[in-house]
Length: 160
Image 1: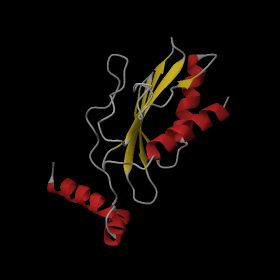
Image 2: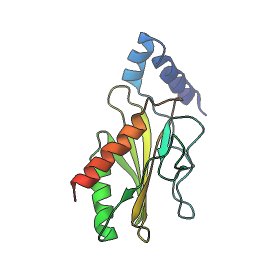
Image 3: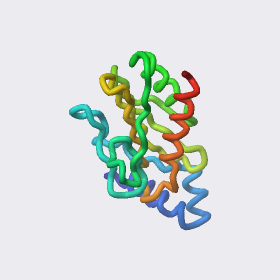
């Protein structure tokens, strides 16, 4: 980790503690480097970390990290296009990687410029789209990733 990245992470931590930190985070952003552990492997998304700043449709249904996948009827290609459009319509969304059955989108929050990672994985046979949303820095996200997935779900359903 470079000194610059370390300073940025410290600044982001300070943002939660002091007004000066909030101002610094506003001007400099709270982005950590892109994670190297994301992506679909063997038809699965990466598991959530131990910290409560991630939600996933692949987490255990009894877990606080669980969110239901996007389910669909009809054609998988149509559903995948709807999910893609819904994800990219989220505020601060920017496409990082796209494959036939996988999307990775960085979502930058407005106020403090935190960068979170949103992933979608199509399972055409099961008629679902798995979703994972995770913060790059910090411990708690105060429910931001869950709200993002629910906004995605609402837009996906609205496009039917």
